[in-house]
Length: 351
Image 1 (cartoon, rainbow, N blue to C red):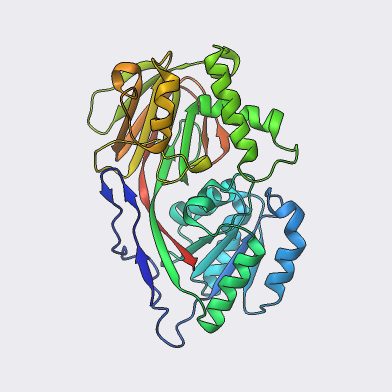
Image 2 (cartoon, helix red, strand yellow):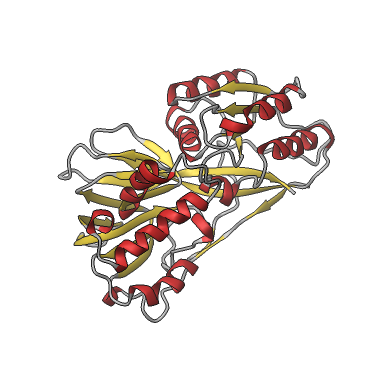
């Protein structure tokens, strides 16, 4: 039987009732099997070395629809083709940026009459989205498990629902994704691409080393990497607040890199927001509880640590930001970059 699961967040649980425009598949009914389409990004970190095995696996199941994609327009075209072929389960074999392109096409362009279910493979460099809502481990093994279940019913399907960020930045098209970061997070990704990526590190090792490098820069007050940026932020109907920001992140993922859960807001909003002021007090003492999802004794506003749940967040940024690992710079900081709840996506897994 289809097992609809919900994951916790600080203010309660994500709602599990399906929206009216979402595909609902009763996989317990004979003959009600999914029509699967697979989007493959050949350039994603995890596919560069294992692409042949992924292609061979898909080729072994001729009923599966497949499309190679590298750019957002190609993602949209692939999804339009899937919609014409009655696909109702879209598999993403790509990194976080590919998942972002898929979500943007689904929510902004609406190629499907009813939203398909999604399955995300761990096929990227960091694969942060896949580690939270997708298949872990080998993409080839995941595909075999998924295809075998679709043919024979062998396996237990479960779904996880997540709100999706809608990001409107000055001078940029609207995009949808799962993780937004600015200030040191933006600089950290730049550092990762310049100094770490391409050195052969797999999985979370490279991003983990970048985090350690950032923390070392904080301890040594190295402002090249750990410099603060001026920020004006407004959460829902609260008054706008101006401060020098060291870290700001907004996400709907329940697990970030290395299993971090740096949220402890108590409100019911779908967006997790956490920020750290420049020069936070008791930083090293606050970090252990910070990463585990509670403020502890030291992670307080008085010491420069903030965490809330919100529905809409407006940020006037003096620097760039990242959305799912892709880097963007607002055209100006007079207009806010607006991050809000853009809807809900449902992700399928097989156990």
